Image 1 (cartoon, rainbow, N blue to C red):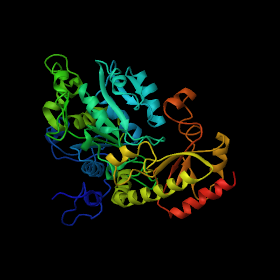
Image 2: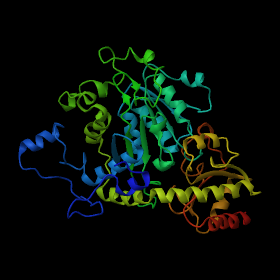
Image 3: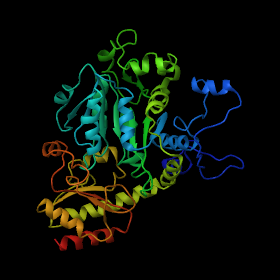
Image 4: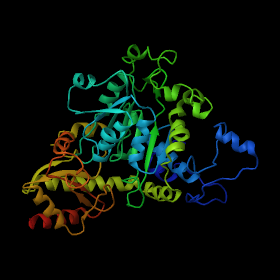
Length: 449
């Protein structure tokens, strides 16, 4: 029976059988017992499904991963210990030393540093592009060793909307997958796979959890990218006619574009992931190779807490978006506000894209600037009552942050400009309190400036 998103939020991933707990149980165990040595051996050879060590698989973690996978419409998913780990794993699963990938330049500051600094130390080069460049300028950034294109559905903290279909077609034209961080929109408001995206990542710490109780991440594979022929193949849903002529030379018999997936893995008895697991090849490699070696797993307790948040995700997103729309409209009219960036506003330059990809609402995060100096923005935040100054975002509680002074302070002035972070930018994450109370708190703080 096909279920709607609201139902999947509650029932996806786990179904209690006779005498079993109605709520997903916490399997707080590192190991799992078997009766014979052969049973264990078959698990290590990936010939049987089952659990033997929580670093690789755990029933609580897997149930939550399956729920998120169902919400996104993918074929496989893996939870990680943080959203940062999810973005790293998603790219590193198909990149190695000497490879290159492309990303939009307005992504979250931590991810910007991960891609531009840390992964560079691993020998993986990243090119940051401005999504407002024309196609010709962006396509000139693709190289023979380019392995993927990365972007955020709604950028953090700037609030830009990523044109998923445009960049999916561009990535596929060059024989690489599109990876989209869908944290802010969530699958309730946007399902990137329906627009040609191949892999989705999440910081489940944000809206999916919604209560600031756990740190986590998730990677979901659409199963639509053919790693051997390097084409996106979801059937008749997406046009790939322009791709084949450009990627026909990338057969596994010549020089494979993604050898980690299409050639034998000597660390796993010479197993070739896409041959052995088909559409689950990418996800299986994530677990069997990367999680085995790097081990960024979530604790089952954290997954249990995440699942509680997921149960009310659809309800909360409606309230977040409704409140944010009211607050953004108020900010737009406020004489002390210099500018507002929220794609729900008809005046916003991303409004048309938002209506295309997120017609039922985007998220609760608003970027705006106050008239005055950086010090004025800081003074404003210090005068707030129940609105909290925290590093977190996408919580049931309304919170605020000054990225140039906080989350993005590691970036230079030039990098801030490239990432679209203005010195006066204030990131307001609108919660699910009464909208009138949120506006009243903003008003009283501005009155004291």
